[in-house]
Image (cartoon, rainbow, N blue to C red; front, top):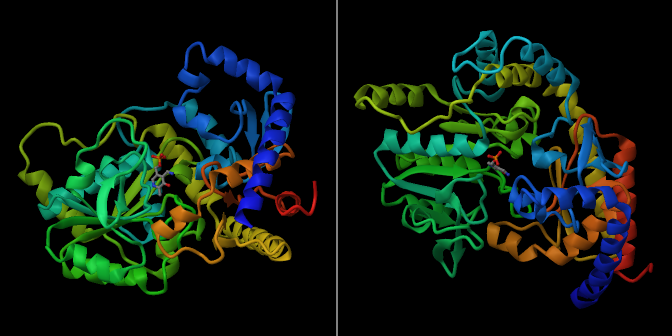
Length: 453
Ligand code: PMP
């Protein structure tokens, strides 16, 4: 079956690529100009990794809709890979940004929104103390640094298949039981295999073995792996992690940058877990570059001891624009007016309808695939049952099949996340958007299975 699916996927890619090129002369022309000054014509090289022959050039993004330079509009289920999880330019955030823009953007000092944001973060995520950074990558790097300073240990434990942003130590993969630098990295990263321990997700015995040497500063993980397809934690796994790590003096950070899709308090809140650190980036300021990390009172006390003991000099943690006036205003609006219970109710119920619709579409065609959902996040996975670790998830990736599906959808006005098959539902996504996506996926499945031409 796989060979037949692949042969039809190849033909579909060819057809849809030609259709895309014909429909996007303006995006192509703009890319040609941009190529003179940006390698590949894009301001960040990843933008070339979309399945399209040239990147769409976006002229407007509002709610769950984006419009390109060729005048075509799309129901957006990528939502900036979570940066716009709560919709593009949520009105409350746009208003806060416009108001604050009249009163200053950055001063390397706090403003009145700082206190409000701190209170709201503590209320929503259950940790009393917070710091801000410009990106989730920065937040994870800061947490690793603090954990090393507090514990006096160097090592980091992460899970095979993890992604935590531009954090050198985490770019490692398990190959035949050995930790090796991940494939495709630009430039060598010596620390990836020296200081990083890597074990399979959902395997508590392996976690225990990795921590046995009492030399691991931090266990950093997403509550569910969301960057290699999607791997949900088995019941009791996250609780077990916390128990085992505490016993060994290893601190635990939950990176909720994607799993904030679960609910208002993140996955941590839904399971009432108490990690030492909690990281959240991407949508926290409605799409402006901003992230936060929270920590317990015990960690805050330990940080004070670290600060008191260190000599004068750069701390090596923090960037100039972090926590600036503009992003704090956006964060305040996002936390208080956008990330509401009502928003989550809408997002999760529509995502459930989407997952059910895709499940039915797969079952009708007897495809060997499954659908996984984490709140407002839905993932189509090319294997019969949900993967239980990163290796299984990696094996299920199928770039050709993704390309065929994504191009088919794009040419009919629907965007899903590139790299895998992630679909996000925002408060602005409509039931009609979801119906359209399910119908189009069904049509594409018919073509791939030979039911339609
Ligand atoms: N953590 C997780 C779980 C992520 O998925 C990502 C980005 N996909 C990051 C951190 C890094 O976010 P950023 O690229 O905004 O720094």
